[in-house]
Length: 155
Image (cartoon, rainbow, N blue to C red; front, side, top):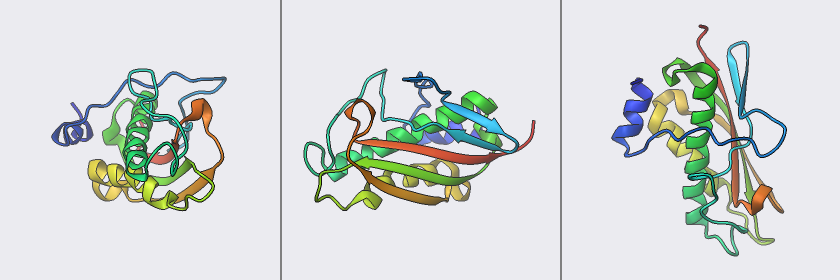
């Protein structure tokens, strides 16, 4: 077991299976020392636990937890490409999308769920640049979607 997966276990988490693509794309691709994930929805066992807009049907706290799930799914996608999460040098960038009610402006707080999970799991390697974007709707009416870019060691 990798050190990263051991750390996940300490946090009471397990790395899920990679979420199968919903359309014509790959969950993650590698080019040189970088892995880019596709947008990861907060899927758990093949389905969304909650749908709707943050600030309407979904609370900011619920959405923050969903963003954590998205980040966990993104780590699974990275592992599917590199084989071992201990090869992650650092998380370079996180982009998060929040399906928002018209008056909701707390997108950064929602995306803290993903950012905090990456830092908890990877330590300093998990600290990253980030964009938090409010959008009208996401695939399957998901409240949150997260994609990450990571640098990995060669091999």
